[in-house]
Length: 255
Image 1 (cartoon, rainbow, N blue to C red):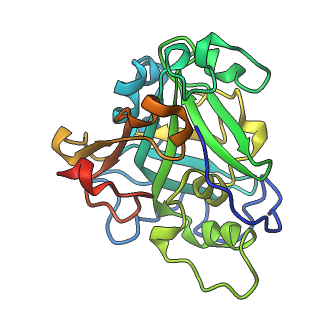
Image 2 (spheres, rainbow, N blue to C red):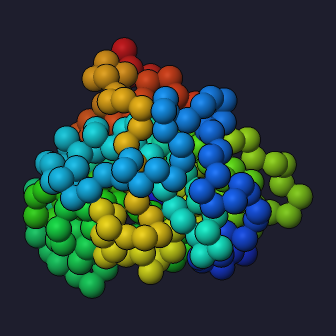
């Protein structure tokens, strides 16, 4: 659960999502394709409940791949992105985890709450990362990258607020291709920490058109935790092979 340092830019106010997109409830298909067969965005029965999150950490990290993270903003705008990359942090036994050794703090309390609890933490006091607790004492999954599906104009506006003036426009694949980028693009604020992803009205998880096949998943070492020695080599980062929105491709792991 580590991030790379970047230059501080002016932050966009959390919880805004002000750019205009399709009205709430109106179907907006994913970029480059249609919505899942027979389904339109906003169908509440696609939402995944508590049972989904009741899985061991590594199993859950893989199960997240292909699922859709949805975010409803204050003005009713809905943003969606397909999860294409995750990392598993196994709790007390995992020296790279915030809960290593079973240590509980005010910061990591969400990791010890029921599966499906959102854990949002800051890195370098600037950027945010979103995790979700799993089965296992202090275990959680870091959401690393998304494929933007709905609300790209809003995502682009939110990301632009954290970039240098005059920077070139972001391509769709660059909007959410990193843990802090996806928090910016979906306007995930610090106050979402300890919320329940299974029941929250502003952020939730949806099923996609079908399960991800095992052969499409790459298992690679986690990113940004090199100081943790052998634990940095554990192949507990999972991503969809060949997907353009993956943050870091590991050619060695793909062999």
